[in-house]
Image 1 (cartoon, rainbow, N blue to C red):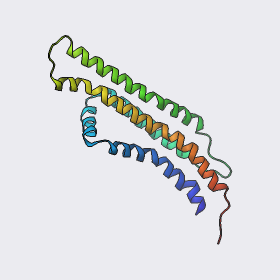
Image 2: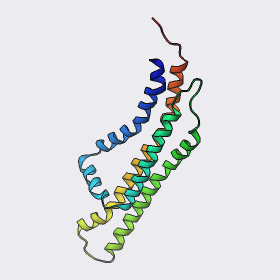
Image 3: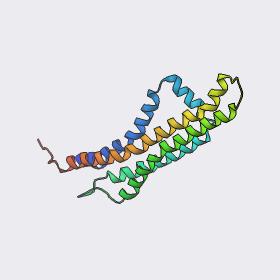
Image 4: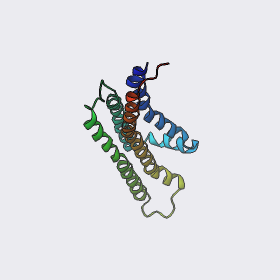
Length: 170
């Protein structure tokens, strides 16, 4: 039973935490903010790019993290470490992509407004919305993609502690 917990259960639980955390973070957003985001993200190709890359990277990291957390007979599976670590560093780019979208949204807003004296508030919001959604998408994908690296480091320590601790037999 202990072997099952160390080799399968703990790695699986630890690998599912980033997805659960991402969903919990999205659900913790105020309802109006979440609704605004979901309505606006449909029209933002840059959001699609950020979310598509982020989810793809997260799924690959999920598999690599699970392998990295697998306890072998005397050590962990270190084969995925280099690729997995590079992917964790790549996650740091998502806030930059979000910032790029923020700047693009601001530029789009000012370009559309131009020299007009009166601009309806709805038009400003429609034009500025991509600036807000790409920032949120970039931050969310950064969090979801940085956490697996941390979980593997902490998870390996936890599993190593459990694996090396003598089993108690009553």
